[in-house]
Image 1 (cartoon, rainbow, N blue to C red):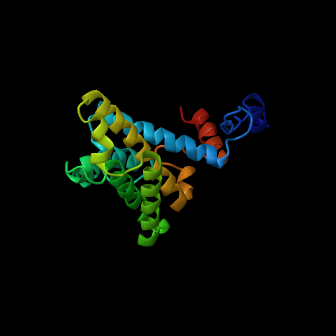
Image 2 (cartoon, helix red, strand yellow; image 1 turned 90 degrees about the vertical axis):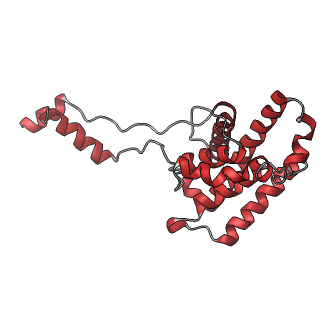
Image 3 (cartoon, rainbow, N blue to C red; image 1 turned 180 degrees about the vertical axis):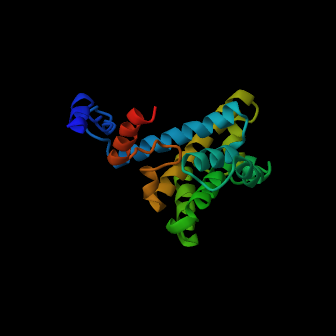
Length: 208
């Protein structure tokens, strides 16, 4: 009777509700969630480029690795991507946004039980290159920056935009190879199971 009376006076808390979708009613569809994640990582990469002064490939690898639980420390990510920036060591060849995106796909996907084979990573690298060229007409740093090479502010703004787009492409490729990352990206809050949550709630009354 004492236990019954305790629970009558202290009802169990309800589990947290699932987050609503964009319309506030239904959970967002998978494509909408993929778009949101890709945009968020793209915006982070662009910010790293603009505010922390990381270069294109560096910003993409750091942003994607952080957001999707990649295996690299920030120092490792910066070191791996350093030579790919500004068209491969300032040579104006392959855009660092493309190179950094391809590097990020390999870094996140080629590990663990969800190993992305080299052939799969190559296919995604090809898809990244094709999508980038479709939008920007070239993947050559020298060609892309020619219209803004004499305008430092416009040059920086364009490269930030290219960096963000490269990060978005990387996220979309990664989710094709490792779709489970959409549901449990690194840093996302992990909800406790209801029995575990109830047990902690109950013990809190007796362990004060």
